[in-house]
Image 1 (tube, one colour):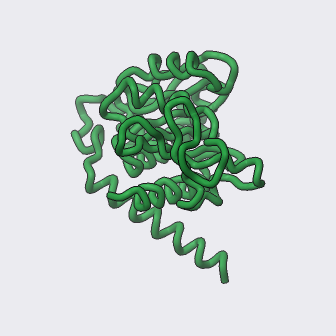
Image 2 (tube, rainbow, N blue to C red; image 1 turned 90 degrees about the vertical axis):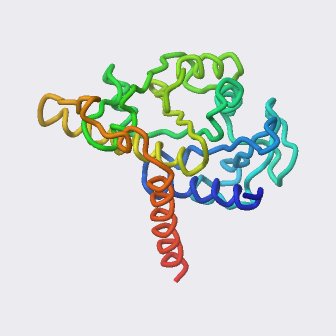
Image 3 (cartoon, helix red, strand yellow; image 1 turned 60 degrees about the vertical axis):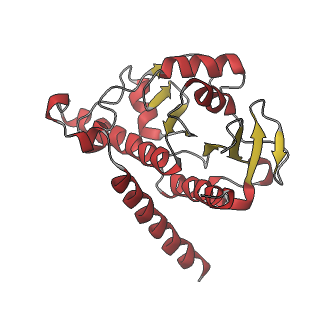
Length: 239
C-alpha cells in the first residue's frame, strides 16, 4: 500500500468516526506509523480553520517526526495529543495505528468508576479489559503523560482517560477504527443495560476466538460497509 492509499484510509476513518457519532464536538482522529518507522501520518490541526474530523481529506494528512515537527504537508502543526501515539509506536511492535476520540458513552462508563465489560459481542473484543487512566490534566500534552498513558495501556487494545476520552490501538487503520467503533457500541449497550438491571458479562471461556480476535475478513468487511455508507451520505449531501 502506498502513502496516498494510507492517507485516504486515515481520512475516511476520521470521517466515519464522526458519522457514527462516537465522538463529541467533531474532536478526534486516527494516526498511522509511517512505513519508514520513525514518522507519523496524522491529520493536520484543522480546528483553527473551522473544520473538524468530518472534513478530513487525504490532502489534510501531514507527516511529522516523533517530536511533533511537520516534515511534509500543508498544515503547520499536527492534531494534538500525539505523544500517546509516539510512545505506543515505541513501546509495541504490534501497534501501527492509534485513534483518539471523545466517546460519550465510554466516558460515562469511566466516570462511574467502572470500565468496559463484555456483555455483548462488541464488548467481547475487549475481553481482556480496558484500563482507566486517571491522570491530569485532561489533555495529554507532553511526553511524560504520553508515557504514563501507554504504560497504563500495557498490552491492551484501548484505554479510557477518565473525564476526557479514549485511546485505541491497532495493527492498521481498519483494525483501529473497528475497535474504536466497537468500544463505544459496547459502552452504549452497557450504560442502557445498567439502567435496566444488573450487568451479566459473558464468560471469557464461552467466547469464540473470532469474537475475541476478529480476523482480517471481519475487519475488512466492517471498513467496506462503513466506507460505502459514508459515500452514500456524502453523495446525498451534495445533491
